[in-house]
Length: 343
Image (cartoon, rainbow, N blue to C red; front, top):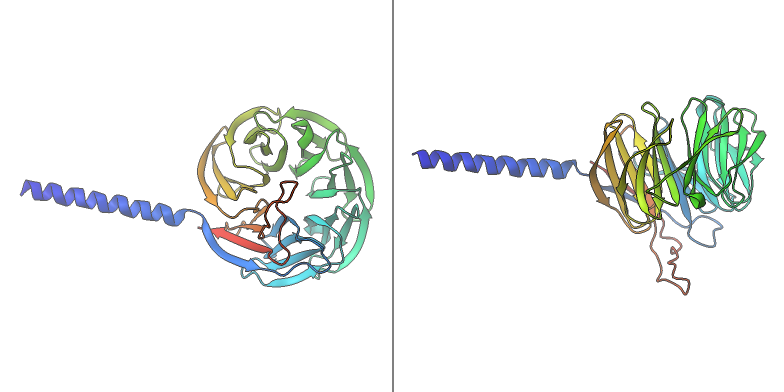
């Protein structure tokens, strides 16, 4: 009888463990939806870049060649497009002024639009290779990163006028604002991160991002003053103190990183790479981070946006042709798609 009891107890334990494993598997991020889109009108090649999710408005802005596609965050239907551009990159929205800002790298300018109607209402001159863009609520200014000119163009969000240009001393990639008067910028070719005073437009600090290098993606926990800078050479995510620049912790990641997002509600850090992965980390405390999981996506899905309402993540990619003589694989026109992952 005692042996029977042991057998029952062991069986119950096995069942419990199996149930726990199943529950954990169900909690892992996995693909929920896929949305396919035709080639952008007027594009001669398939090109896509940043994703910006406006969770409150339930819209997702997709940078797609000559246009910005705006889709419904819940069902993927196309809400509208902002077209007639040359090479779109980033999108930022200043809700308090009812204005959105799009960078066009080929034309070296910023398109200003109404987020409600998606109608173009103006433009501002930036510089060639205008790339990422961020709105700083503290100064009420828009900061545009100009890659090749090694500069940032600063625009008054209310008037749309250019108020200054900042020489960054290297090629900028992504930028984030802390909401208190500082804009942080990854400088890819200098392996550093700079802190810019958003009011005086002066550089306050320059910090190395070692053990990462060639930093591209950047996110921030503004409450706890933590920066998440991800680089390609070496392939690392580094957590830095936003006040001292001290490196707190680092993690290896896969190749071709291009986006990072921090979610305040859950304490999760998401990092997406061209190799086809989303790395997810958790802020256990402001000084201790842990790796949660590594989600397999698809080749080329290096840019990403987060819906803070559903906690779903959006990545985009396309099919790729075989590598040419330069070793690069070009995206095939008409194969652009968005993949949605969640729990």
